Image (cartoon, rainbow, N blue to C red):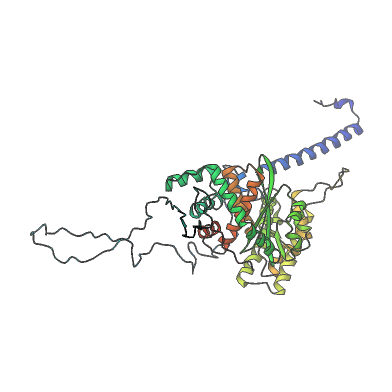
Length: 467
């Protein structure tokens, strides 16, 4: 540990040199403390950290919706799901009054219905076993004739398409663990299924759905607007990456050991995509030849951090400007007029100039690579350099304000990770991606997922609309 030198033995020049060194050290330590405090202050509301990392001190959600924009509760035109009486119930139980009056003992005649109540329930659940018997007969000429089993009936004992569809529905739509899926089927139907059987059924579904998923990937190449995102997933203790491409009607999910360009090239979808890609500004996306739209929900979170933790007022003004423009686009229902676009771009440039003034660029460090800059300056530079992509939602009615479509798909991936912790094999993750691609796409197209899976195990998967 260094000790303070004897100041009485130093001349003025040596004291000045000591002061400069101490000032430089204080500046460095202050910056390090600020960075560490900033890391502690980060959460899902002011950075790209997922909500699962917030712990018990979860921030209060902040809605982009302006007060009074929509009333609370169900919106006008929304179809409710309240139980309603049916005209033809399956069973009717009659509850008659006593035969005689308890006051005068006269016989009560011709009772009439005065009130009806209906109870909706499900019948007792139990599995059914269908036995297939093949007969044979010998003709008088000596030739032997034999019946044939139906297609798909290939083993002495096997599960049918309904129970297989239930397994896949539970594990890949409701994200239930393998063991609990087998236990649940045992509790509900008296037919417990082993873990190995659950995995085998999922593998069979993946193989049957693979051609449909390939077709979904091909369709993604030609859509005008797509959303992209990626997230990590553990496979046998090693990190792999889930990549998502999605629209309002299609979803494609792939997995790869690599997060960046190698994975995107291996998938072969985005290399042939020339529409507009909505993303968070990650460099491998930025390097693609298509048009780009940046996720402003990410920007708002980052600017919230700059405003609340770094105390820079320009960030709050930028938040208000983007939200105001987003609100105005929603009212207009399409791209804004040229004068309104010019108004917002002028205000945008003025706020960026203010941000640049209070965030001086750090001098070259003398080390290899780019000199590290502050988070505020990095955000400022992105907003400045890719301003057209930030504001594309204002000039093209097909471009949304945020990348929420992709993030919604990713939330289910994190639910799966939270429940299971990951996958034991890469093949298991690949099966998961295939089945999730199919189910997420059909869900967007309002198909009955269970019926679609039943048809899949019967050999004719329900096909989505690829347009």
